[in-house]
Amino acid sequence: MATQPKTVLLVEDEMSMARILQDRLELEGFSVLTATDGQKGLSLALEQHPNLVILDILMPKMNGADMLKCLQEDEWGKVVPVLCLTNLETTPDSIQDAMKKYAQVEYVVKFRTRLDDIIENVKELINTSEKPT
Amino acid sequence: MTLSMENLYSLSTLFGVLIVGVIVFMHRARLCSFFLKGKQDIDKLYKFKAAIESSQHGFVITDLNGNILYVNDAWERLNGYTRSEVYGKNIEILRSGKTSSKLYKTMQKTLKSGKSFCTEDFFNKRKDNTEYNARVEVTPTYKNGKQLHYLTITEDISVRKKTQEAQVEFLSLASHQLRTPLSVIDWYTETLLSSSVGKLNKKQHSYIQEIYNTNQHMLKLVDMLLNTSRLELGTFAVSPEPTDMKQIVKSILTELKPEIEGKSLNITEEFSHDLPTIRVDKNLARIVAQNVISNAVRYTSTDGDVWVVLKYISAGSLVKNKVIPVESILLSVQDTGIGIPKIESGQVFSKLFRAENAREHHTAGTGLGLYIVKSILNQTRGDIWFVSEEGVGTTFYVTIPVKGLHAGSHLSIISSS
Image (cartoon, chains in turn cyan, green):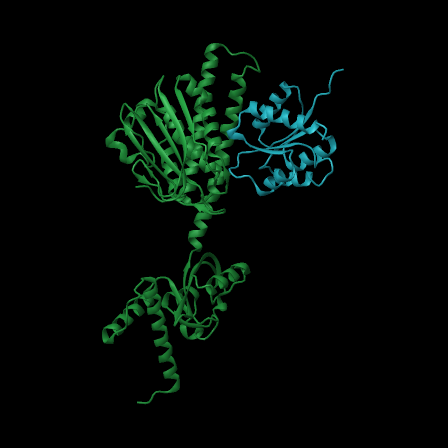
């Protein structure tokens, strides 16, 4: 039986970044949903329940940190793995708090991370979240 | 001539104020053995008074309840009140309501315990209701072992703070805006090189590799420039946590593996067993170790040797003729590289400096690495020095104190000579 492709929701306002991320994820067999701000990202997440959310931090309308907060108010949103991506030097406090509280929230700095490693990170987070506890 | 009670009162106040001024100055200049004697001493008294009167900082002396006994000219100019308006009034007239009440409590506690209190976070209100960000330094003065008065020195730092805030904001914006396009180039070239979207021919591959490498260099350069600015602005946030230096060194060596293997360098690692976990900022510790180790790898030619050693050093120990004042971890990195020319050895830690032979050997260096390392170590009571012979090799010694910095402290630069 063919397994259903895993869905990744990519919330990123920088189009060129979103495009290469989407291409690489699709090449790896993921089905990719995209949103360009936190507001759209949040409603898409709650509606589609993807297997993982990739979340940029600096975004218009609703930033990634606020979207993460809203996500965690939802039963499903509390457990979905989230990979926060940013080029900010310091991790925002709210993201740090979320990482301490929820094991499935991770944070990577874009300019220090190879795309290969991000894909690996995505796979790992999805695998871990699917293991029965 | 008769003296009215009022005159007597103001004379005694003036005299009291002068004495307080003298006590404060004696205390500050540690002139404890100084005693007032005759006319000479009265001259000195007037000298101190003139000094306070003409200071550009606002001086105010209050009793222990905050009632104002004396202010100087600068204080009058700063706050818009004249002396006659404020004598006898409480210092609370300056309260704008914007200074945190916690800060006032801390101040009172500190002063009661006999210590001086200093802050840059006061927001004072002038007579015309305009506000300013004040730096204040409050010192208790004593008579017969009992607190007598408080002396407060006030400075308006609004402009300085605003400029600094603007610079910090610019830095954070610049770092984000510069890094985003560089990250885009990084990820696209990485994908092209990985052949996951089709195979490039040899020439195309080598061109893309060139773009990838240059872009990596740009990313590092941006990182270095931002670190430099942060250190110079004193806005490098430091968050110390228990850190295993061995782990940091090992991960740096793993990162440098392609270069190490490309040049067939022999790396010897030596970590002593008694290495304690140290309380430092992981990022800073990494920047320090990364620069020193990667320099050794970069400036050592094919088949050369590099030794990386981590050792525990107790307080007062001697390392290469240097006394290490506090218990530290010593990182020494020895190489058989190009060495540092004797004539240029004094400039190695200067900003943007690169030695002649280093420039020939490796054109892409920034001249910022060791400057940043030195600045960080200056601020953390650590140290760095080296022994080198041109054409033979170099050993860098770095000591990092086991106790490190306190949480929430900020680094600022001490310019390296």
